[in-house]
Image (cartoon, rainbow, N blue to C red):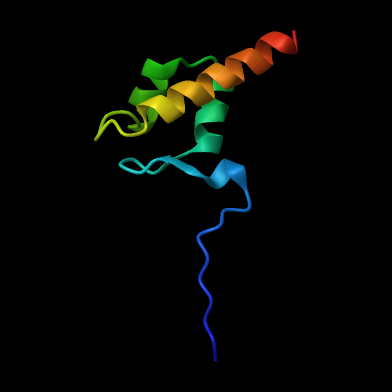
Length: 73
């Protein structure tokens, strides 16, 4: 029997963006859609409060979401 393990993520919403807190992309998007900014998302999830390695990725993602929202208005 061969056991194959893959780290490929087929659902982008399940991608962990902050490994310290385990915060996923979908969680961040949901909170953004509820009107929360980066500071509020950090307080709500614990993201951005550990090693800081996720700061740029989350910031870029929130910027992307803001641009999408602006273009859909």
